[in-house]
Image (cartoon, rainbow, N blue to C red):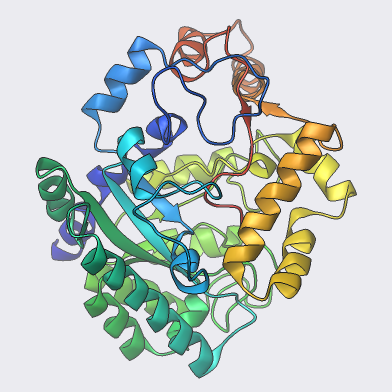
Length: 385
């Protein structure tokens, strides 16, 4: 079927993100971005290094787009002392392709949301124009492979929130022509046609128009992204789609009981669909202990909203949330999250489900992700929302 083939051409390029992302933005023998000073030196195991070299490494959700607009002194081509993404660190981490997030707060709708989304799209085109030796625009998996063969970083775009199509399939088609290659059906609030995991359900999943959106995305060859959506919206999307879907930045509810995360049943359903889940490495989605403590302290969403009002733009708010969370972890106000804790929690869940001892796959995770001598603390990565 033509629809399936067009979307499937994108999926192999993003398949290895969840495995490879712990290795991004680091040199051998150097702590990755987010490591707390005082932790043991982080070393990448030979097995992980070999996997990383073989893979085409893709980041499917990068909020740096906001900085391209709101920070006049931000230079993507130089190493920056704030944030997590710039071209030098992309190069050092072996990043081959990046989906720049076209994100507008779901509180902004209508013509204003459209105007701002077009400005963000333009900023990605401008970045490619300004840094032609490093970046190249890509819209297909073939483009990504071609960029990798020429030692360039493929720049793609994903639209984070269906509110930006302003209930207009014609506008969705225009975004596709401009190069947008996935649409996250909702952000943290419901749209007029889909329920979000961050809001009170209004539609019982997807409305009739919402199902038309999924069908049109299939027809256009634009990937359906189910991160942020309510569980019922997720299942409605799987029922309607005729192509594999993705979760561009979602983690596992068995690890952290956050509504943004996916249950085991959802993960199995998406696997049957042929889709791919890219793990969100933000600490609030990786540790139940941290999530509960953060919730008691007011919750990440509330803090982010307050910072957004204080800062006046999302770029500043994201960086401030990074700083505030890091400080709270350093001071002990919030629990630290280590790779070891994540692996142990996931393997404990696996043992509980299987009713037996730890399997070899769990033992291997320690070799790939976190050698016992390295107690790497995770903090705020690129995707904090």
